[in-house]
Image (cartoon, rainbow, N blue to C red):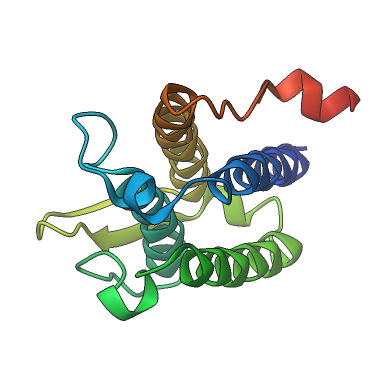
Length: 162
């Protein structure tokens, strides 16, 4: 049951990413990169932060601990970010497809980007990544709404019942 729950959470996560990215297509370069006090400094950097986490965390689950966010060459434009997001989604779907009930309880050791080592069950890591994305997508939604481009209702129930 826990595996199916996470598959649903990640399906919802990717649905909301698509909603955000669809609206981001409407912003100009200045709006995309404009410095702000919200999120991670700009709409672009907020999205980079999300996609970086979606690369870092599954890498950690599989035994590699990246020590920094995506390199600049992977993130200069919305097109590059969209491409990277598509790659991360495909990789996560492969992880989820191979995931067994016993896997979610496996303790995963890793090292954070600031050098601290720790270990926790995979299900906690998976829940963290979903919650992390929710927080930062919300920040992106606020930035878009301030530009008059609300991404609309991103509620889980809308996703579940269509």
